[in-house]
Image 1: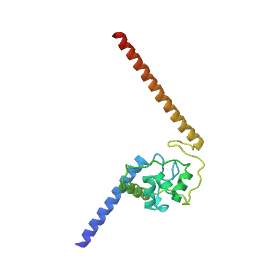
Image 2: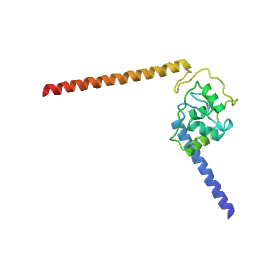
Image 3: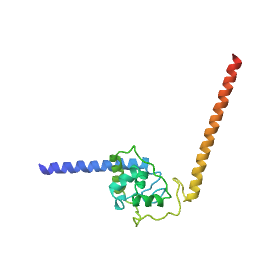
Image 4: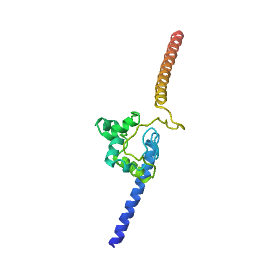
Length: 177
């Protein structure tokens, strides 16, 4: 009788672990895959088998708010920040601890080529998500600045059009009266 109960409990645990991995995969694809690959560097480090390089506690702190963790002075967090051209990883306040643990479970369930050294080394280039060839950090920064300049110009043009339309409609209203 006890053997059957133990088997059932073990199966339930296995099913829950598999559910966590599936949930983690979905969360990774929706929140992390734009900047991270499993087996190679992108904007951030490869994350497959992260448990071989970092503790779960460290991972949870870094992912939930990397900037706060870096500012706390954690040596590994600071080294990663410097290695990846001080790219700011956004905080994920919308992800509960359970979600972060599911991502942890997924990352440790997949195989990948993990870096041989746990100490970060300096990358030679930054790869823009979706880019087929590496992009230099200077080019990436130029494109980022150009984007914000163009976005600002678009906002100014939209405001000017709104002012002109408003002025024209007030003029028509005063002529009609």
